[in-house]
Amino acid sequence: MTSFDPRLLNRRQRNNLINGLIYPRPIAWVSTVASDGTRNLAPFSFFNAFSFNPPTVGVSPGSRQGIPKDTLANVRATGEFVVNLVSASLADTANSTSAELGPEVDEWDLAGVTPIASETVAPARVQQAPAALECRVHQIIELGADEPSNSLVIGRVLRVHVLADVLDEHYLPRPEALDLVGRMGGDLWAHTRQQFVLPRPSRH
Ligand SMILES: Cc1cc2nc3c(=O)[nH]c(=O)nc-3n(C[C@H](O)[C@H](O)[C@H](O)COP(=O)(O)O)c2cc1C
Image (cartoon, rainbow, N blue to C red; front, side, top):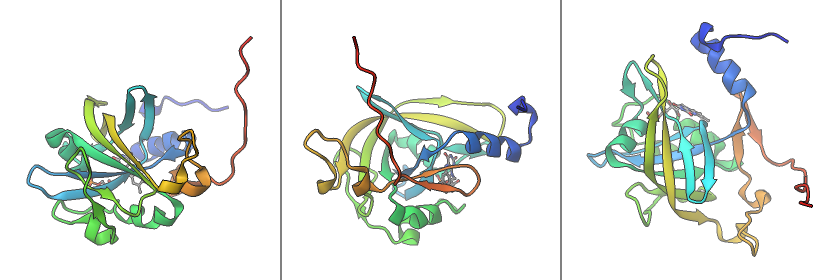
């Protein structure tokens, strides 16, 4: 076993170690709108669910040299975002929207995906995504003062969209129908096609 103080590693080593150990991370393909109406779409794998009551998710976009990524700037300005979930068939397309582009570039056009108006928030959702969560910011926690750093955006889920044939009668989605992918370390992605059943221990 080797042990490290991660703070003593360089940025690349730290990134590799954290992202290569904590996986698979689900991917939030986040749609936001700037205060001037410019729309934005980018993937984030510092993403997870933290509660179903109230339905709460967190996503952690970064800043570079004090300049927040467009997604972070937009959620700070508007308090709204949509998390689109990424199926295997959308992985390439979602990845293409992670290119570092100026705020004037429309990632929707770049990726060739279709916006559908949301019901409770201004940012649109991606029609091609098998599910989407309309969210309002609950809290934003700044994770570090040293650059580059990230901000943890905690959002309340106001509305859930799921492909019609995905849910069983108890609202449990069928993974085969969603076919979601996750992110691992480096450029590795993961399928979610191999599962196993492990019933919870029964209470006595
Ligand atoms: C699968 C994937 C996951 C990513 N996860 C994150 C993340 O959690 N946080 C982050 O700051 N950037 C992440 N990135 C990089 C952003 O997508 C990238 O910086 C993007 O340009 C940000 O777009 P924006 O400036 O329009 O918000 C990820 C990229 C990919 C391909």
